[in-house]
Length: 455
Image (tube, rainbow, N blue to C red; front, side, top):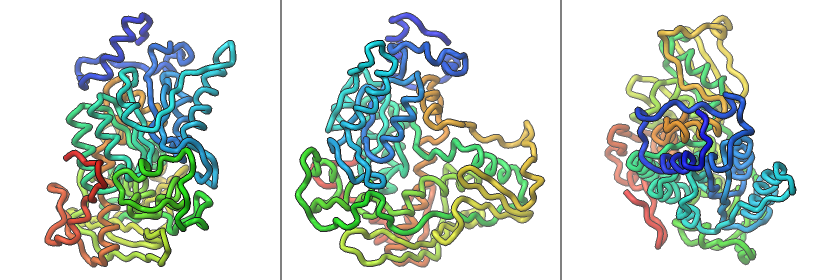
């Protein structure tokens, strides 16, 4: 659907910032589909602000820049610019600004472009009326508050995985998305991988018989991703880094390079280690193929984790737990399992990992899924799928509720391992831990003032 006039552009932005009304909206065909990708006027693009520009945020900026229906107008990060990110690399709001403006400058006759503003406080981004959507790509402990505030501000949201730091946060985020009728995409991009989708469809359509076991392989360890592992003792906060704001709702703690940026993953105050870092991927696809993406297990069993002593990092380096479902299906999550997801049924197995899928019976790999059989949501580009959803006001491939249910499994696994529980009963309908008051306390975390989590 072509849109040319300025009045239409204004109507489009007003439409994006109001309630979802799918039935009243005509189908919107992407510019690429009609061969007009390079003809999208700036006034007609979805304007985006990026909140969190280190690590994955920098990569995601490049993905959004590849879609000419998008205009990145703001980047926000508490760090101006420094090393300590992926493989010791440099990131922050200033490098992100240079990346964005350098990209748009290529299409200007002058070779110059100045139109991407920088911010330290995410609330300043949300206050801009000209921004349609935001990406939240902060450390895990900083997902919930910006997402909820973005929904309240009428912004659609792309939020990196894992969705939340706690189960309570995930529920609050889902409630906000629903209440404010926002389009939401979680960065669980394996749902846009045809290999995972194909494997899940084979399982759901009975090609391996009755499903009984799902093996989920995740990486172990605490790798020094930022090349700061030798700097765990307190240091002076670097100039240009608002460390107090980085801590945000997390407990007060002295600054150390190994605490922040990419290596935050190995500290429970900010993340859940490999269990949740990769838990936003493989357990999510496991639930997809099990048909349980809107519910969860009823029990966590046989939870075991290894926690080598360290002056700073405290997440599990090795782990194993089993999620038991009402149907009797058992999901095994472990760093000892082969990477990916393996579905085992009465008539064989199907496995999937990035870039491949396989089966015991090779003939089913060419099996055609009939018209009357189950066909899963098809997305082949996670970022374009989000923009498609924003324009058409349609649910994306990785919505908030689905991401919440998937990462809940990992949060429960971490709780069981940390408390040494052989069994942890879970009610997925009420989202409550059953008959274990101590474990139930870990469903949420106390926030450092003045930050609060809205119920």
